[in-house]
Length: 186
Ligand code: HEM
Ligand code: HEM
Image 1 (cartoon, rainbow, N blue to C red):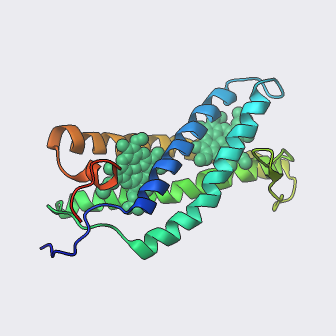
Image 2 (cartoon, rainbow, N blue to C red):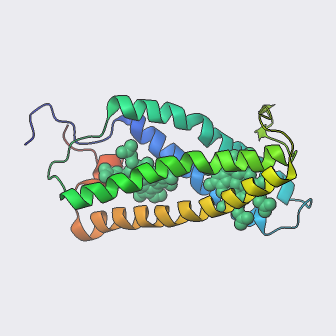
């Protein structure tokens, strides 16, 4: 099944993208939820939302690079291939995460841009406003952002639970495929 040249783990670049973007997304989720509790126009909501948008727009900038690299580099082989249904479930979850990683910052962008609000990147520059200022569009962007954030939360919880199950109950190779220090073989 596996020749000598088989690679069994994601390469350094893919792991770098995974863990950097996982950290950015978790930070954006935390700040977004916290800021949404605070009254509009108050401090520190405004400052937190500037950081939230900067982190979210960074995710949006990194995503095409990651996707192009992923399409070129592909997925590593398994030492012990999973069942067809388990592999299909992992594929559906992973590609859902890629789609949601695109839709979430895009909906946030539409919400903020159409609302006439700022689009900062850590005070370095402002993103261009590519949509008209339009209250209804901004509201739709907000609705989408809210529900897509829930979808991300649910798929992410399943992702982390699945990985934890592999790592602690089945004790198989799955975590080692993405984990920096437990790379073996390949
Ligand atoms: C924080 C806890 C996390 C852990 C422990 C974790 C762990 C892993 C592991 C072990 C894999 C490889 C699975 C396999 O080979 O079948 C993987 C893949 C993946 N993870 Fe995570 N992950 C975490 C967070 C995230 C976050 C926050 C995201 C983004 C929303 C994410 C998105 C992905 C994607 C898209 C893949 C598929 C990679 C590919 O095939 O291109 N993960 N993760
Ligand atoms: C990875 C990217 C992102 C994640 C994970 C994320 C997540 C979230 C979450 C969970 C909330 C709280 C929703 C609520 O309870 O109402 C939120 C709110 C918000 N997000 Fe994002 N977001 C991201 C990207 C963006 C981007 C790129 C922008 C704009 C450029 C943006 C603008 C906002 C704004 C303005 C709010 C406040 C909503 C309100 O209370 O009015 N987000 N985000």
